[in-house]
Amino acid sequence: MRTMTKSQMTLFLQRRKRMDNIKYAIEGILFAAGEPVKATKLAVVLDTSVDEVNKAVDELKKEYSENHRGFNIIDILEGYQICSRPEYYTYIQEILGEQRRQPLSNAAMEALAIIAYKQPITKGQIEHIRGVNSDGCVNRLYERGLIEEKGRLDAPGRPILYVTTDTFLRCFGLTKPTDLPPLDLRSLNLETSQGLQLEIDENGENIVAENEENTEQ
View 1 (cartoon, rainbow, N blue to C red):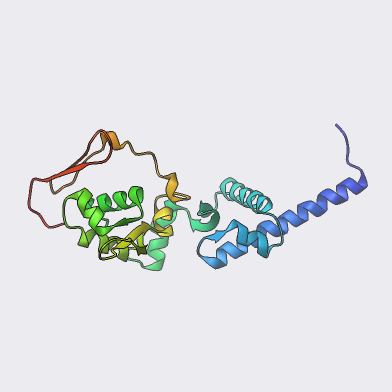
View 2: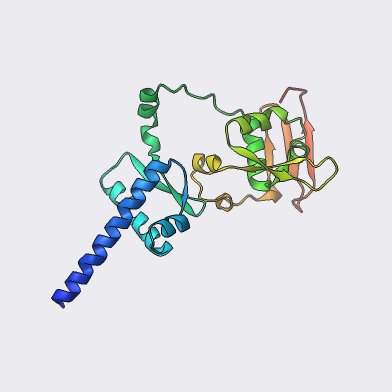
């Protein structure tokens, strides 16, 4: 095994010190930001490359994992965010005194799935797929910050287009919307607690909706 010369060792230590500075600067920035920060922005601020930013973040993730830290760095939208580990949520909730939010209904989850896979999409298109009025579902998803408005459709009435948000990605552990698991539209067969049956034909186009019960959505 070759040994380093004095100059090589000096260069190695300088590079190691530089990487440590970048790494802990990123840690401080992400901690203070409290929201996703793009890797490109970190690279500009720290006067380094995106590759070095990614390498530094990988080292931080490894340190957090090996030392069983209570937080981790997640990848989101070509950037990073520091988040508490989900297994400690109950303790954090107790300290902060937050009330547990009521979980989303089956109907709201169904609407969210439609938006996630078909975005951008209008409320009218969501209702066409579900076969029922979806005002309540869309409003609840919007209030929870899981969806947001993204312009308007160039059609009569110019209806609002909806897309999922960064909050949606964080909640479902996704980096970007395209990370959603593939959906086989040919075999899609959804049934809600209200008896709504949705079927998509073999071309994945025409949707047949049959509401067996007249219930409020």
